[in-house]
Length: 151
Length: 379
Ligand SMILES: [Zn+2]
Picture 1 (cartoon, helix red, strand yellow):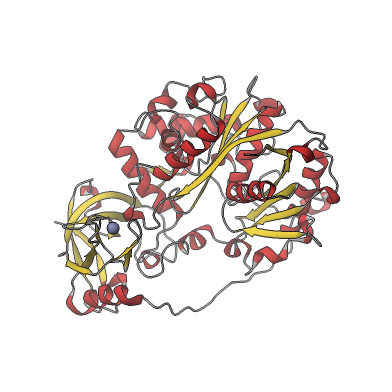
Picture 2 (cartoon, rainbow over the protein chains, first blue to last red):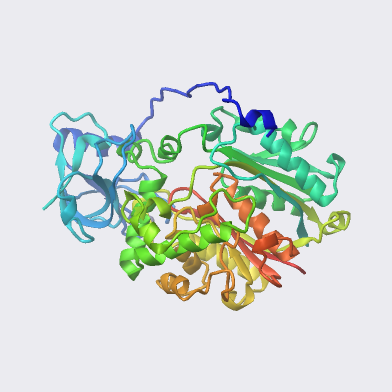
């Protein structure tokens, strides 16, 4: 850096890349999100080849490289297998800190489901049982589950 | 594999904010210095790989904007969007594929964008992005699983921060040389449990470059060639819930393949120095386990016993590591450069005496979804 620059305020430009997207949620994504929205149900699906129950559901099993066509209703309860209490805020978080992110093994599923926990953070541990609580006003996205609450 | 070598290397000083240099300037600086290092001219560079990311740059098709700065005017130029260790892997493949030499150059300025917003956008837009996850909170989830499963303590992780910031005092390129104690780390601001401020790498600006050459062209370089003995990368599942976050299987696979190529049977005794991607303190013990340096769950004790300090049996991150400077995309390439400098005997005040074999490592994707492992040697 040239020496004269050290003593002056640098000239900067402000800008933003702001692009609106309209993502298709796909065939299995539609069933999953419509079940959240219309029935307050969490559904997954099972790979016949390796028996893995996926949630959110997948059209194909990435490990077996085979199509999946068996739907499984999972209920709304599970256990916490990873969690962190977040102490900072930034505009893209769905709620104010402190809140927790958790990976939840839903009963009957073989993979973890990532979501948030807002209440009872001091009681949160590995293995804590939690239940999905749904929003009143549901729109067909992952935040139709408001959060998971400790049972 | 044919013999290929790193014959030129350079890096900028890493800073929280470079106000004097735009992307073009940083790339021009390291390209020029890497050629000077090798005593090459532009005619000696057969092709160029740039490493960039559109969100970090704040412009789309960012690869097309920096070619002249990388000396690629009229040359075959190609791009990696990801960590520089993977850019270097592509560069090595191009030399093996017939080019005599490849220049690999990576740049980023974390200071100019917003790392939380940018890393949030790496998550799946349908299922995960609306949750607001970013690099810190997702890594904190990984830390929680790893530390809980094996009883790795926050104090053990804090020792990594103490060690690496101390090492950075001997590296003129590092951004955060610091004398701190375990207590300082433990008392630093809570960010996302169990991660505290001094468990985190900083926001950084910087660039780095290397030149890879085949055996014939390496002879033309002034520098002692640092041979690429083994290199491999491997990737795990995209969704965090699909992975066992405490078991870095893609790192295990990449390490096994790189060791097999390099003829390494016992990494602990055959490797002299490790430069790994410690974006957060917990990553150092976890990645060491994945590399087979110690057994699963033993990473915390390895650090506690002082095995990884400068004069320990296996020094890890003598440069200060990513904790002491984290230019995203550049950081993995820096690990390769630091490993090469160690073998050259040109690491200055952070030189490990007699280093002949070094491991360098880069990661890509949330929580180390993919890993790239390099074994470099003097012969
Ligand atoms: Zn399957």
